[in-house]
Amino acid sequence: MRPANRFRIAVVAACPFPWRRGTPIRIRRLAQALAQRGHQVHVVTYHLGESTEGDPFRVHRIRNVGWYRKHAPGPSYAKFLVLDPLLQRTLRRVLRQQTIDIVHAHHYEGILAARWARPACPVVYDAHTTLESELPFYRLGLPAGFKRIIGRRLDQLLPAKAAHVIAVSERIRDRLIDLGAVDPDRIDVIPSGLEPALLAAAGSPNPAAGKGTVGFAGNLGPYQGIEYLLRAFSEVLRERADTRLLIITTSSFAPYEARARELGIRGSISLRVDDFSELPRNLSEADVLVNPRPEAAGLPQKLLNYMASGRPIVSFDGSACHLRDGKTALVVKSADVPSMAAAILRLLDDRNLAGQLARAARKQAADEFTWDARAAQVEAVYERLLSRAGLLPQPAGSSGR
Image 1 (tube, rainbow, N blue to C red):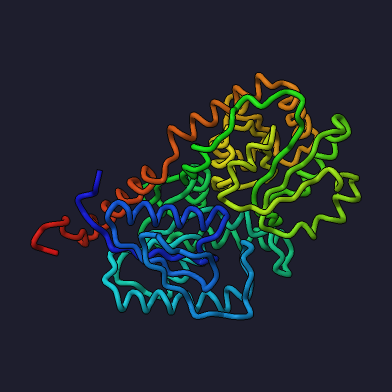
Image 2: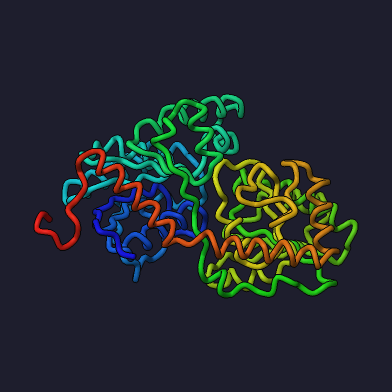
Protein backbone atom coordinates (compact mmCIF):
# COMPACT_ATOMS: atom_id res chain seq x y z
CA MET A 1 0.00 0.00 0.00
CA ARG A 2 1.30 3.45 -0.92
CA PRO A 3 1.61 5.90 1.98
CA ALA A 4 -0.64 8.96 2.13
CA ASN A 5 2.34 11.25 2.71
CA ARG A 6 5.46 11.53 0.57
CA PHE A 7 8.63 12.42 2.44
CA ARG A 8 11.83 14.01 1.17
CA ILE A 9 14.61 12.15 2.96
CA ALA A 10 18.34 12.76 3.27
CA VAL A 11 20.06 9.48 4.20
CA VAL A 12 23.55 9.82 5.72
CA ALA A 13 25.75 6.81 4.95
CA ALA A 14 29.21 7.12 6.51
CA CYS A 15 30.62 4.10 4.68
CA PRO A 16 31.53 2.87 1.19
CA PHE A 17 28.18 2.83 -0.59
CA PRO A 18 26.89 0.55 -1.88
CA TRP A 19 29.05 -2.30 -0.64
CA ARG A 20 28.64 -5.97 0.22
CA ARG A 21 28.39 -5.96 4.00
CA GLY A 22 25.77 -5.38 6.65
CA THR A 23 25.69 -1.60 7.14
CA PRO A 24 25.77 -0.58 3.44
CA ILE A 25 23.27 -3.34 2.59
CA ARG A 26 20.77 -2.09 5.18
CA ILE A 27 21.19 1.51 4.00
CA ARG A 28 20.77 0.65 0.33
CA ARG A 29 17.81 -1.68 0.72
CA LEU A 30 15.91 0.73 2.96
CA ALA A 31 16.64 3.60 0.54
CA GLN A 32 15.42 1.50 -2.38
CA ALA A 33 12.28 0.38 -0.59
CA LEU A 34 11.43 3.90 0.60
CA ALA A 35 11.91 5.31 -2.90
CA GLN A 36 9.79 2.53 -4.39
CA ARG A 37 7.05 3.48 -1.92
CA GLY A 38 6.97 6.95 -3.43
CA HIS A 39 9.37 8.96 -1.28
CA GLN A 40 12.17 11.18 -2.60
CA VAL A 41 15.47 9.83 -1.26
CA HIS A 42 18.91 11.47 -1.34
CA VAL A 43 21.86 9.38 -0.07
CA VAL A 44 24.85 11.39 1.19
CA THR A 45 27.93 9.20 1.40
CA TYR A 46 31.68 8.71 0.97
CA HIS A 47 33.50 8.77 -2.35
CA LEU A 48 33.90 4.96 -2.27
CA GLY A 49 31.42 2.38 -3.48
CA GLU A 50 29.93 0.48 -6.37
CA SER A 51 27.58 1.65 -9.10
CA THR A 52 24.09 2.79 -8.12
CA GLU A 53 22.84 2.77 -11.70
CA GLY A 54 19.22 1.73 -11.74
CA ASP A 55 18.60 2.58 -8.08
CA PRO A 56 15.54 4.82 -7.51
CA PHE A 57 17.38 7.37 -5.37
CA ARG A 58 19.97 10.10 -5.90
CA VAL A 59 23.51 9.73 -4.52
CA HIS A 60 25.60 12.71 -3.35
CA ARG A 61 29.25 11.79 -2.70
CA ILE A 62 31.99 13.69 -0.93
CA ARG A 63 34.83 14.88 -3.13
CA ASN A 64 37.27 12.17 -4.14
CA VAL A 65 39.95 11.54 -1.51
CA GLY A 66 42.32 9.65 -3.75
CA TRP A 67 44.65 8.35 -1.05
CA TYR A 68 41.81 6.83 0.99
CA ARG A 69 40.65 3.53 -0.54
CA LYS A 70 39.77 1.53 2.59
CA HIS A 71 36.52 -0.42 2.25
CA ALA A 72 36.83 -2.38 5.50
CA PRO A 73 34.43 -1.47 8.32
CA GLY A 74 35.34 0.35 11.49
CA PRO A 75 36.52 3.75 12.73
CA SER A 76 39.81 5.34 11.82
CA TYR A 77 41.48 8.67 12.46
CA ALA A 78 41.47 9.40 8.71
CA LYS A 79 37.71 8.95 8.55
CA PHE A 80 37.11 11.12 11.60
CA LEU A 81 39.50 13.91 10.59
CA VAL A 82 38.99 13.97 6.80
CA LEU A 83 36.07 11.95 5.45
CA ASP A 84 33.46 12.78 8.08
CA PRO A 85 33.95 16.57 7.89
CA LEU A 86 33.58 16.25 4.09
CA LEU A 87 30.42 14.22 4.66
CA GLN A 88 29.03 16.98 6.86
CA ARG A 89 29.77 19.60 4.19
CA THR A 90 28.12 17.50 1.50
CA LEU A 91 25.06 17.00 3.67
CA ARG A 92 24.90 20.73 4.36
CA ARG A 93 24.99 21.40 0.62
CA VAL A 94 22.16 18.93 0.01
CA LEU A 95 20.10 20.54 2.78
CA ARG A 96 20.69 23.93 1.21
CA GLN A 97 19.82 22.83 -2.34
CA GLN A 98 16.95 20.44 -1.61
CA THR A 99 13.80 20.64 0.48
CA ILE A 100 14.28 17.89 3.05
CA ASP A 101 11.66 16.73 5.55
CA ILE A 102 13.82 14.37 7.56
CA VAL A 103 17.46 13.27 7.91
CA HIS A 104 18.02 9.54 8.47
CA ALA A 105 21.54 9.10 9.83
CA HIS A 106 23.07 5.62 9.95
CA HIS A 107 25.69 4.65 12.51
CA TYR A 108 27.66 7.01 14.74
CA GLU A 109 29.56 8.83 12.02
CA GLY A 110 26.21 9.51 10.39
CA ILE A 111 24.66 11.09 13.48
CA LEU A 112 27.79 13.19 14.03
CA ALA A 113 27.71 14.47 10.44
CA ALA A 114 23.99 15.19 10.73
CA ARG A 115 24.38 17.20 13.92
CA TRP A 116 27.34 19.15 12.57
CA ALA A 117 25.28 20.06 9.49
CA ARG A 118 22.56 21.52 11.75
CA PRO A 119 19.49 20.62 9.68
CA ALA A 120 16.24 22.49 10.32
CA CYS A 121 14.33 19.19 10.05
CA PRO A 122 14.29 16.30 12.55
CA VAL A 123 17.10 13.73 12.59
CA VAL A 124 16.47 10.00 12.98
CA TYR A 125 19.45 7.95 14.17
CA ASP A 126 19.70 4.35 12.92
CA ALA A 127 21.61 2.37 15.57
CA HIS A 128 23.28 -0.66 13.97
CA THR A 129 25.37 -1.54 17.03
CA THR A 130 26.71 -0.14 20.28
CA LEU A 131 30.23 1.23 20.40
CA GLU A 132 30.72 -0.26 23.87
CA SER A 133 30.56 -3.71 22.29
CA GLU A 134 32.31 -3.01 18.98
CA LEU A 135 34.98 -0.34 19.52
CA PRO A 136 37.37 -2.59 21.53
CA PHE A 137 37.88 -4.79 18.45
CA TYR A 138 39.45 -1.99 16.38
CA ARG A 139 43.11 -1.00 16.50
CA LEU A 140 43.22 2.65 17.45
CA GLY A 141 46.40 2.63 19.51
CA LEU A 142 44.41 2.52 22.76
CA PRO A 143 43.93 -0.18 25.43
CA ALA A 144 40.82 -2.33 24.94
CA GLY A 145 39.38 -1.36 28.32
CA PHE A 146 39.76 2.33 27.56
CA LYS A 147 38.08 1.86 24.16
CA ARG A 148 35.15 0.16 25.88
CA ILE A 149 34.80 3.11 28.27
CA ILE A 150 34.92 5.57 25.37
CA GLY A 151 32.37 3.47 23.49
CA ARG A 152 30.01 3.40 26.47
CA ARG A 153 30.24 7.17 26.87
CA LEU A 154 29.50 7.73 23.18
CA ASP A 155 26.57 5.31 23.47
CA GLN A 156 25.23 7.54 26.24
CA LEU A 157 25.74 10.84 24.43
CA LEU A 158 25.23 10.49 20.69
CA PRO A 159 21.75 8.92 20.40
CA ALA A 160 20.40 11.83 22.47
CA LYS A 161 21.39 14.14 19.59
CA ALA A 162 18.61 12.65 17.43
CA ALA A 163 14.91 13.39 17.60
CA HIS A 164 14.23 9.65 17.40
CA VAL A 165 16.24 6.42 17.33
CA ILE A 166 15.71 3.27 15.29
CA ALA A 167 17.55 0.21 16.68
CA VAL A 168 18.14 -2.91 14.61
CA SER A 169 17.59 -5.19 17.62
CA GLU A 170 15.91 -5.37 21.01
CA ARG A 171 19.37 -5.77 22.54
CA ILE A 172 20.49 -2.36 21.27
CA ARG A 173 17.22 -0.77 22.32
CA ASP A 174 17.47 -2.16 25.85
CA ARG A 175 21.13 -1.17 26.22
CA LEU A 176 20.56 2.43 25.09
CA ILE A 177 17.63 2.76 27.49
CA ASP A 178 19.67 1.25 30.35
CA LEU A 179 22.47 3.76 29.67
CA GLY A 180 19.98 6.64 29.83
CA ALA A 181 20.81 7.57 26.24
CA VAL A 182 17.19 7.64 25.11
CA ASP A 183 13.71 7.42 26.64
CA PRO A 184 11.64 4.33 25.77
CA ASP A 185 9.13 6.40 23.79
CA ARG A 186 11.90 7.79 21.57
CA ILE A 187 13.20 4.49 20.20
CA ASP A 188 11.75 1.82 17.90
CA VAL A 189 13.17 -1.57 16.89
CA ILE A 190 13.25 -2.17 13.12
CA PRO A 191 15.50 -5.10 12.12
CA SER A 192 17.05 -5.49 8.70
CA GLY A 193 15.43 -7.42 5.87
CA LEU A 194 16.68 -10.36 3.89
CA GLU A 195 17.90 -10.46 0.32
CA PRO A 196 15.05 -11.82 -1.87
CA ALA A 197 17.51 -13.41 -4.30
CA LEU A 198 18.88 -15.56 -1.49
CA LEU A 199 15.46 -16.84 -0.53
CA ALA A 200 14.49 -17.53 -4.14
CA ALA A 201 17.73 -19.35 -4.91
CA ALA A 202 18.07 -21.27 -1.66
CA GLY A 203 19.03 -24.90 -2.04
CA SER A 204 17.37 -27.86 -0.41
CA PRO A 205 17.42 -27.63 3.41
CA ASN A 206 18.22 -31.36 3.48
CA PRO A 207 21.84 -31.60 2.30
CA ALA A 208 23.01 -35.10 1.51
CA ALA A 209 24.78 -37.13 4.14
CA GLY A 210 28.50 -37.69 3.84
CA LYS A 211 29.48 -34.16 2.90
CA GLY A 212 31.56 -32.00 5.17
CA THR A 213 31.73 -28.32 4.20
CA VAL A 214 31.68 -25.68 6.92
CA GLY A 215 30.87 -22.22 5.57
CA PHE A 216 31.45 -18.61 6.64
CA ALA A 217 30.41 -15.55 4.62
CA GLY A 218 31.36 -12.00 5.51
CA ASN A 219 34.23 -9.61 5.99
CA LEU A 220 37.18 -10.70 8.10
CA GLY A 221 37.19 -7.73 10.47
CA PRO A 222 38.60 -8.31 13.95
CA TYR A 223 35.15 -8.36 15.57
CA GLN A 224 33.98 -11.28 13.41
CA GLY A 225 35.67 -13.91 15.55
CA ILE A 226 37.73 -15.54 12.78
CA GLU A 227 40.23 -16.81 15.35
CA TYR A 228 37.41 -18.76 17.03
CA LEU A 229 36.27 -20.09 13.67
CA LEU A 230 39.74 -21.38 12.81
CA ARG A 231 40.20 -23.05 16.19
CA ALA A 232 36.77 -24.66 16.06
CA PHE A 233 37.41 -25.91 12.55
CA SER A 234 40.73 -27.42 13.64
CA GLU A 235 38.82 -29.47 16.22
CA VAL A 236 36.25 -30.51 13.62
CA LEU A 237 39.04 -31.56 11.25
CA ARG A 238 40.55 -33.83 13.88
CA GLU A 239 37.26 -35.75 13.99
CA ARG A 240 36.46 -35.59 10.26
CA ALA A 241 39.59 -35.35 8.15
CA ASP A 242 37.62 -34.86 4.91
CA THR A 243 35.92 -31.65 6.12
CA ARG A 244 36.75 -28.33 4.46
CA LEU A 245 36.18 -24.73 5.48
CA LEU A 246 34.74 -22.43 2.80
CA ILE A 247 35.31 -18.72 3.50
CA ILE A 248 33.35 -16.34 1.26
CA THR A 249 34.69 -12.81 1.63
CA THR A 250 35.98 -9.66 -0.02
CA SER A 251 38.66 -9.32 2.67
CA SER A 252 42.25 -10.49 2.45
CA PHE A 253 42.98 -13.69 4.35
CA ALA A 254 46.61 -12.57 4.84
CA PRO A 255 46.22 -11.68 8.56
CA TYR A 256 45.15 -15.28 9.25
CA GLU A 257 47.52 -17.21 6.98
CA ALA A 258 50.14 -17.87 9.65
CA ARG A 259 47.55 -18.87 12.22
CA ALA A 260 45.83 -21.29 9.81
CA ARG A 261 49.19 -22.93 9.05
CA GLU A 262 50.06 -23.10 12.74
CA LEU A 263 46.78 -24.94 13.39
CA GLY A 264 47.53 -27.30 10.49
CA ILE A 265 44.29 -26.46 8.66
CA ARG A 266 45.38 -24.20 5.76
CA GLY A 267 45.20 -27.01 3.21
CA SER A 268 41.54 -27.60 4.13
CA ILE A 269 40.48 -23.96 3.69
CA SER A 270 38.97 -22.68 0.44
CA LEU A 271 38.67 -18.93 -0.20
CA ARG A 272 36.08 -17.48 -2.54
CA VAL A 273 35.36 -13.87 -3.49
CA ASP A 274 32.06 -12.63 -2.08
CA ASP A 275 30.11 -11.78 -5.24
CA PHE A 276 26.48 -11.21 -4.26
CA SER A 277 25.17 -12.64 -7.52
CA GLU A 278 26.95 -15.88 -6.60
CA LEU A 279 26.20 -15.81 -2.86
CA PRO A 280 23.14 -18.13 -2.99
CA ARG A 281 25.15 -20.77 -4.86
CA ASN A 282 28.16 -20.32 -2.59
CA LEU A 283 26.10 -20.66 0.60
CA SER A 284 24.34 -23.72 -0.80
CA GLU A 285 27.71 -25.51 -0.94
CA ALA A 286 28.00 -25.44 2.85
CA ASP A 287 26.55 -28.21 4.99
CA VAL A 288 26.78 -25.98 8.06
CA LEU A 289 27.05 -22.18 8.17
CA VAL A 290 28.89 -20.65 11.12
CA ASN A 291 28.61 -17.28 12.83
CA PRO A 292 31.68 -17.03 15.13
CA ARG A 293 31.13 -13.40 16.12
CA PRO A 294 31.35 -13.41 19.94
CA GLU A 295 29.38 -10.23 20.53
CA ALA A 296 27.01 -8.06 18.51
CA ALA A 297 24.36 -5.77 19.89
CA GLY A 298 22.69 -5.64 16.49
CA LEU A 299 21.57 -8.20 13.94
CA PRO A 300 24.46 -9.33 11.71
CA GLN A 301 23.31 -9.29 8.09
CA LYS A 302 25.05 -12.61 7.56
CA LEU A 303 22.52 -14.27 9.89
CA LEU A 304 19.64 -13.17 7.67
CA ASN A 305 21.53 -14.42 4.63
CA TYR A 306 22.22 -17.70 6.40
CA MET A 307 18.56 -18.08 7.44
CA ALA A 308 17.34 -17.44 3.90
CA SER A 309 19.84 -19.87 2.38
CA GLY A 310 18.21 -23.04 3.68
CA ARG A 311 21.38 -24.24 5.42
CA PRO A 312 21.69 -25.12 9.13
CA ILE A 313 23.43 -22.58 11.36
CA VAL A 314 25.78 -22.67 14.35
CA SER A 315 26.25 -19.37 16.19
CA PHE A 316 27.73 -17.92 19.35
CA ASP A 317 24.97 -16.62 21.63
CA GLY A 318 26.47 -13.13 21.89
CA SER A 319 25.50 -12.38 18.27
CA ALA A 320 22.63 -14.84 17.74
CA CYS A 321 19.90 -12.22 17.49
CA HIS A 322 16.59 -13.85 16.37
CA LEU A 323 18.06 -17.34 16.39
CA ARG A 324 16.50 -19.84 18.82
CA ASP A 325 18.67 -22.68 20.07
CA GLY A 326 17.33 -26.05 18.98
CA LYS A 327 14.58 -24.40 16.93
CA THR A 328 16.24 -22.42 14.14
CA ALA A 329 19.94 -23.03 14.90
CA LEU A 330 22.39 -24.48 17.37
CA VAL A 331 23.48 -21.62 19.63
CA VAL A 332 26.48 -22.03 21.94
CA LYS A 333 28.17 -19.87 24.54
CA SER A 334 30.31 -17.12 23.05
CA ALA A 335 34.04 -17.87 22.76
CA ASP A 336 33.42 -21.52 23.71
CA VAL A 337 35.41 -23.13 20.90
CA PRO A 338 34.86 -26.79 21.93
CA SER A 339 31.10 -26.24 22.08
CA MET A 340 31.11 -24.62 18.66
CA ALA A 341 33.11 -27.52 17.21
CA ALA A 342 30.76 -30.03 18.84
CA ALA A 343 27.70 -28.24 17.40
CA ILE A 344 29.22 -28.24 13.91
CA LEU A 345 29.98 -31.95 14.16
CA ARG A 346 26.48 -32.66 15.44
CA LEU A 347 24.89 -31.03 12.39
CA LEU A 348 27.30 -32.73 10.01
CA ASP A 349 26.34 -36.08 11.50
CA ASP A 350 22.61 -35.55 12.12
CA ARG A 351 21.14 -34.54 8.77
CA ASN A 352 17.55 -34.79 10.03
CA LEU A 353 18.22 -32.20 12.72
CA ALA A 354 20.15 -30.07 10.22
CA GLY A 355 17.16 -30.09 7.86
CA GLN A 356 14.67 -29.26 10.61
CA LEU A 357 16.68 -26.25 11.79
CA ALA A 358 17.29 -25.02 8.24
CA ARG A 359 13.61 -25.20 7.28
CA ALA A 360 12.51 -23.39 10.43
CA ALA A 361 15.08 -20.62 9.98
CA ARG A 362 14.17 -20.15 6.34
CA LYS A 363 10.45 -19.96 7.14
CA GLN A 364 11.08 -17.33 9.82
CA ALA A 365 13.19 -15.31 7.38
CA ALA A 366 10.50 -15.47 4.67
CA ASP A 367 7.67 -14.62 7.08
CA GLU A 368 9.25 -11.78 9.05
CA PHE A 369 12.07 -10.11 7.14
CA THR A 370 11.19 -8.24 3.94
CA TRP A 371 12.62 -4.84 3.06
CA ASP A 372 9.24 -3.39 2.05
CA ALA A 373 7.84 -4.26 5.48
CA ARG A 374 10.87 -2.63 7.10
CA ALA A 375 10.43 0.50 4.98
CA ALA A 376 6.77 0.73 6.03
CA GLN A 377 7.88 0.64 9.67
CA VAL A 378 10.46 3.39 9.04
CA GLU A 379 7.79 5.40 7.25
CA ALA A 380 5.54 5.15 10.31
CA VAL A 381 8.36 6.51 12.50
CA TYR A 382 8.78 9.49 10.14
CA GLU A 383 5.06 10.19 10.19
CA ARG A 384 4.79 10.08 13.98
CA LEU A 385 7.87 12.25 14.44
CA LEU A 386 6.90 14.90 11.91
CA SER A 387 3.30 14.95 13.12
CA ARG A 388 4.41 15.64 16.71
CA ALA A 389 6.66 18.43 15.45
CA GLY A 390 3.87 19.95 13.32
CA LEU A 391 5.98 19.39 10.19
CA LEU A 392 3.98 16.66 8.46
CA PRO A 393 3.90 17.30 4.70
CA GLN A 394 0.57 17.59 2.94
CA PRO A 395 -0.69 14.27 1.50
CA ALA A 396 0.15 13.65 -2.15
CA GLY A 397 -2.39 15.27 -4.44
CA SER A 398 -3.51 17.93 -1.94
CA SER A 399 -3.30 21.62 -2.74
CA GLY A 400 -1.02 22.33 0.19
CA ARG A 401 2.11 20.85 -1.40
